[in-house]
Amino acid sequence: MRNYPKIFLMITYFIISIIHVTQAADTNYLNIININTANDGNLQMIVSAINEKGHPIKGLSPANFQIFVDGNEITDFIIQPVLSNNPLSVIIAIDVSGSMRGEPIKMAKQSALTFIEQLNTDDFVSIMIFGSGVRFLTDFTRNRYELRQHIEGISANDSLTWLYQATNEATNKALTAPGSRVAVILLSDGKDEGSPLMQNDVIERIRQTTPPFFTIGFGQNAEVEYLRRISALSKGYFFLTPRSNDFPWIYDMVLKQIQNQYLIKFYMSKPNGNYNCILKLKHLGIETYARKKFSYNYKGFNPRITDKENLGSTVKFFMTTTIIFMIIVMVIVIIFLFKIFRSDKKQNISQKETPTIIMSFSGMTWLEIIGDSLISEMKEGAIKLLAKKEGGLFTYSLCDRKNQYNIQELILSRYDKQLSRLYSKKYIYLLFANQTISRPKEDLYNKRKGHARIFLDKSGRYRLEDIGSGSGTELNNILLHKGEAPFLNDKDEIKLGDIIIKFHEIAS
Image (cartoon, rainbow, N blue to C red; front, side, top):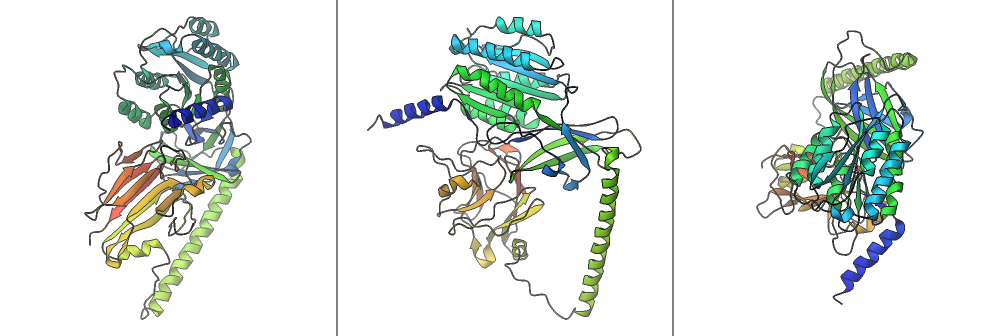
């Protein structure tokens, strides 16, 4: 009986070897790689779109996208595939610890050489190796002969694995890239040993600014959770394989993803400054989101639109806006007159119309979800949602002490129809459509209810706890560690992947 767990692990590893490669299911497949201001005042956004199998999504048009800047929708934009005159800058990082010796390092070198040969002649590559230290064998260069010479000379003899330091150094190197399209391919077969940096330091750095990391975990000793996490946070992709023969296939997948990107051009009539952009993609009935902060810096004086061909759509937009504005004014006047003639009557507003009505009571606690959609679905009382709203603000009531309405525990999770059986009838769930939110985990030894939970403790105050999520849970920009369950205070900000939730509480 005691050998059953070992037998199960062996069977699992054998299945993985049969299917070759598994990718991280929690990885978001829409990524805003860069947003910059062009010379004509237009904003240029470089985007990659990858389906659930890791393949690039082709043939997208403006009808597939929505753009929001600080909550305002941008309707006038054009989209086109990225052309070869916008070169790539790729950092190839290879683990050279002793465990990579033999066939693994041979296949890693061969795959890197093939990858370089398939790039465009204008693309740049920098080679980095890490083991008992981190070394860049080349700067960003187009010289294919120099790259081949350095790759062929790589050997795996180091005793340590500076995985965290290598991640940080690759991020620093990316800031010096000659172009705006940058990616990192990082291959490792072991856990970090000897790095001067701590994992949390590197994770925090990646949260701030980083190119997409395409991480490859090789073998059963790879630091899977870390590699999965940095790829998810940087909007790259994670690959896990037990066989070095899969390296060429993985490099080819990465190449397709970074070469098949889109350029979105748009203009916004706002002053220079820092802004938040939300990009929404709808493809084959699946919606996903990506967010990115950017700086708008244009020294010109005359507003410009994205393209002369879009002049008609711009005029149509302003005409539509004017009509909508006039309708709103008329509605306001009608309401005002109605109140004058009917001021002696009181409105009878039912508490069931909208959850925000509950906020008029004292002792109220609620969550404010910003900029994302929720899954509204009842399932035998297990899932309790008060409303559904696309984008904007959504309010969810937790506690109304005056009316004795209290949720003891709320599970925050991503809804997955295929795993709906995992949503237990014992709990109340708040389910998100966004793929950066972890869903319940299905395995025999580490079953997880979802991404995080908010629960009421004995003192009558709510606490927040991460329950083993892939992308982590932040409270006021501080990452929660395992076992932590801090109290929630009024106006605290919770971040789950790309989702922002604000906690509100009115004292009774």
